[in-house]
Length: 312
View 1: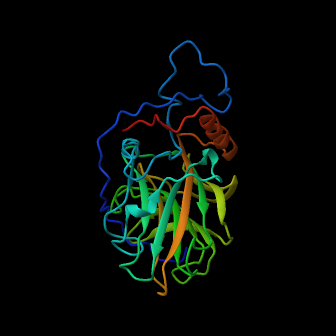
View 2: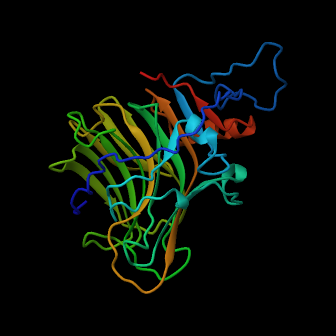
View 3: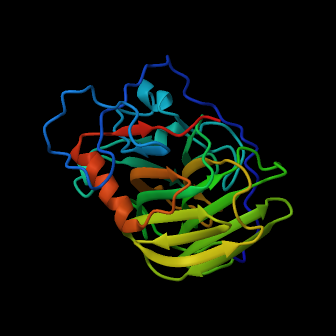
């Protein structure tokens, strides 16, 4: 990745704080081998689900749904970067029906611009309250090669990444899947950058670039285990980092759709990124096939959310 480090975030977040709800976790199968259609046993179902698991299908009514905050997600509305500073808005976050998605629902992140800072809205959703460390991170993500509406040409970045809560942390950690359909920072797109960070400022990272158009649904995975980080796409390994380029502290999960710069004016345009589901398994390297089997089991059981990851 030849581009400079993105503008530090400064963590100027405004959570959509709402009355807390008691979130009863749905009963679920213990893994892909269980028969989700089998009759329920006479004993009470286990509400906690498989240990060390975070799973969400993003079945929410909107950014102001109390369950979104209660399940540990927030939509960014604060200031700072990266991209067009101070342009973060909850208006671009939604949870519509989608016939192309497993289960028929998605988290949609729609960035928009008319080529001016005043007319630009970026969108990011992040996890809160359940920092994640080693293990398997996976998400089914829809990447866009062209705007949903308006003229093409923006330098948009569609991302899925775990990252430290503070850019200035002594143990700063960040692991990126970043898709740039039109390139940016002087590079030519399309490109998928996988980047493992050791330090944000000054930048210290290693990276790999896949130069390929990727419009459509993909299972994006990051496995951090035994002193090694492996990035994969649809089950195909793309890049591995080791040594100092591995997580050194717990991280939050971010899904973000943002603009590097404003290369032209001349009418509004929108860019869509979608997330079907997110899955995390602590302290285990899980294959893409087994991730999908487990996710299928959750959907079959009608399980939309599980969090059995220890808080500390």
